[in-house]
Image 1 (cartoon, rainbow, N blue to C red):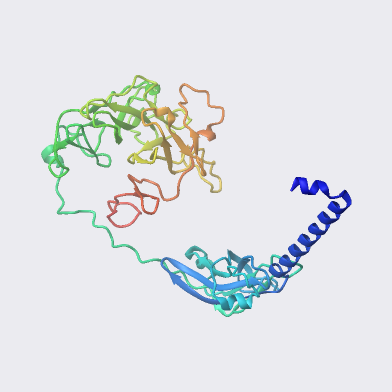
Image 2: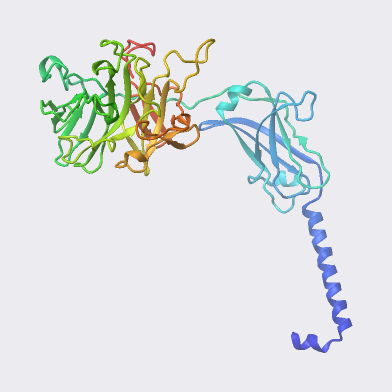
Length: 453
């Protein structure tokens, strides 16, 4: 080709190239004209139908003469251009396969995709149910206005229709069995369940059932039903009056079994100011001189003995505020179990509103710490300093030891509470729905309702 072109004179070559480009441009414009004609928007709302778990709006919409799929916007009460205008609800795209009759209406001989199926989530239907539904096709070519399609205003947004609830789970697979009877099994007067029951299996296959007190013991056996309470002390609180050691009264509340031998236990530590000289105005004030934080503990022998690292390495989590006599209850309490999802370990901690009598009411001082529970997580269960609290969007809140760190901005080290997580003692993960589920056994003695889960 190069040799042949080289034999032509330059003027003939230029003329030929110009002519070829002109023909190509004309062909391109002709193709564009056939496929992108700026015709009006048209379409039809066929029906509203429930499918599996929610309602959908079905129909078709296009811009005549244009094979490209167009957007469809849904409005409530009125069309978008009415006075007053309708309220925008949601949007979809007419990009599903359609039948030849729709191609003919759209003047699309090339087989575009013009049908739509737009979801109407139940949450939206709570707001827009029974209001008139308007659907608008959105033009994509030429100086053409968007337009309501046929059927607009003739349909109503439906009322929410939730999928049927699954059967209520049976929490017991057999008759209840007494795993611990204080009258029969207690090893001392304070050997009573004072925390939610936890269980794990050690490297020998033995179940350890623990419902902790400040002196921790366990029930042992091959199954939960056959565990027998042992008087062997698993962990004993030290009643250390030096608050910065975090070793006064400790309840082992949250366990994670790493390999059957190494068991991590997060402890709820209570500093009882009324028991230590000069730390409380009254020796019987068990509320306002009550300070809580959480400690890291570990067993290396399968859960038969737990130890704490030497202070301050036993520190796990606390408020960024030091103990203040007669200003409690104060602090964080870890009361729920540890759960692993993916590479993350999760738990929750509860805090009392603080300082006392704070709130948003008239004459009340603002709360430095809100009442409620927040979620926490880590990717290293063996590093207590790696836990982070929920900030409302992500896990970024770093907890600080106020006895060893000058805290310039305390609010930055208080995590954001999660609604309805208060007092939860159990956290589970439902894999199918990707939901965390928090539970509480209510004894019927509080305002949360009758006895039950």
